[in-house]
Image (tube, rainbow, N blue to C red; front, top):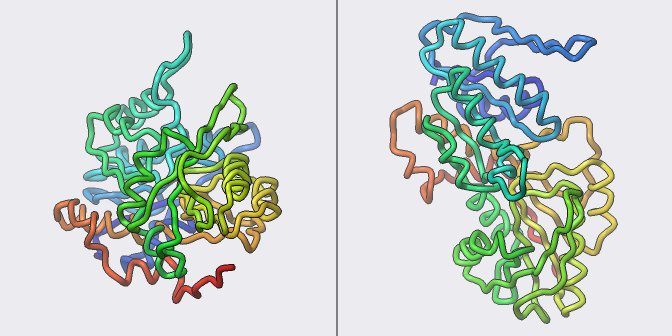
Length: 335
């Protein structure tokens, strides 16, 4: 593994370090400086000539700055004669902007894809895109990972997967993915009827379609920003007679205010991966972050060893789960 060269943007250092720990390699030496007027400066502090480079940069909490920094990193590696550059984007925020659904708007995901390719990226690795078709915006290879295997295994180790469990999609748009979750866990599905009337981060859940009375409910979604939909669905499920409600998400982009909203809600537990940096934030006890870094590290190893990516779907090593969860998982005591 000594020839794998992993570097990180300034907001993805902890995530990249976990990847390196999994692979047994050192994180590449680099630095990022943000000047007082807002300009960003990046520099690779070691030779990467003829190396296959992997740059880790999530685009989530400060998407514009993080995206531009990613472009500068790719350019710096190419100008330093890297053999190839793979952009690892654990969370790609602009994947939400995948279509022109009203007049005179930009298809921002396509703009981002064009920029990443134009500056020189040879490959992209990401996870749980909000719109899977964004893969098609790239002409270069895109490896689209799924956090489902991590989330389902964590649910099993929590002891909540039983005959009383129902998987719930907060809206019709995520129903297909919710069905895949349910099939893996061997339980039925319910669907929320969600309406969003504007571009703010508030949506209203009008109805729950499916039988949830007397059941434990596992709400699944790809991300949350304000926590509003999750809390709204939780109240709706409890009003319908659900016993306990859990939320399992691929990405969490919550502010501390959003985390406080989750903590004060009747939600039993929210589980998400660590694709978006939370350094310095106060994580409440109702929110549990598991690491997707070992999953990305395993993808890097697979690609670097020229193995088929099909290995990543259904053949993950036990060690990966143990490191993702930070050790043994204490089963929950349910009401």
